[in-house]
Image 1 (cartoon, helix red, strand yellow):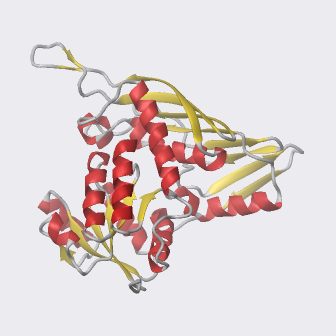
Image 2 (tube, one colour):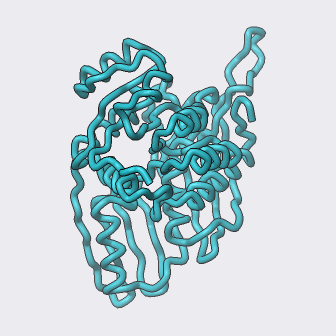
Image 3 (cartoon, helix red, strand yellow):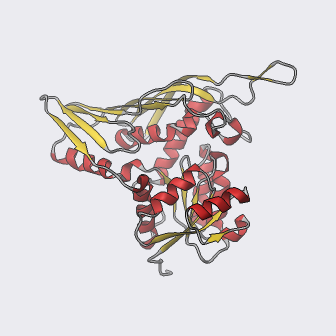
Amino acid sequence: MPVAPAHIRFGIIGPGRAGARFATGLAGVPAASLESIWGRTPDRAQSFAARFKIPHLAPTLDSLLSSEGIDAVYVATHPDTHADFCIAALSAGKHVLCEKPAAINVRQLEQVLAAARTHDRLFMEAMKPPFFPLYQRLREHLQRDPIGPVGFVRAGHCDSTLAPDYPLHFLSLAGGGILGIGPYEAFLALDWLGPLKRVQTMGRLSPATPDASGNPDTSGQVDNFAIFQTEHERGMAQLHTGLDILSSGDALLCAPRGYILLHANWWNPARATIHYADSRQTLLDEPYHHGGFNYETAHFCDLIRTHQRESPVITHALSLDMARLLESARTTLGVRFPGE
């Protein structure tokens, strides 16, 4: 078995918002560095490299993936290209951490996981909440002072303040609230309630735009609001996402002897209040640093160093269940992406 590097060198595919958050977080990860960046728009990639002091600007994707100067790749593009870039990076012998959602549907994700197995490389979907100090402290606290098994999860977030050119508004980029916001809600339900059994969905699509003849063109519609109820092995969840209304980003975990309020924004968890049936309340407050991406990235680096090919926290089975939940919810509303 080859010796795993002590210092993990990263390349980024995609100099956008997710890439910037990853680069900010990586500055807080010991023994890891950002060495290369590639993007389809050279000017943006060059500005990104200057902003984060990245030593190498890759002129092509192939040059990034063939470089011996990187060990792992962070895929930070829009979801429509995640699977293709992940498979390319894995095939080039790089470990891959991919921005959520890891793929637009189950079929694509299965292809990514098959590539990871074939090329014997680590693949992990970037799902940050369980690595935050607050989330881990909450788990530890419930071991000492339990409320019983969580049987109901309520979570959701709607953001009507996103600009009209924001990627979530475009079907061609695999947009919509379910795929753009929903992965966090799907994770929370699956993490506390176990594997998925079934999904029920209601919602509405974005307005149809007029075509050249002035008739409604429904081909580019994404889900503007969705509420999806899910049943799991250990309970049920009520989840929602949206782009045309505004809602709070807190979450609720309910059990026989109490409930937990994860304060907004719960996907960057810093505060939680545990309400006990005997009227006690316990407030947990755990600030985070470097934007929070540093915690999942440090975990990913440790997996590389210990020759692991799957995270025990964000398992491949968990990613597949997230993909199943989200695909079921959006296709029920009639949202299908190009090529599906």
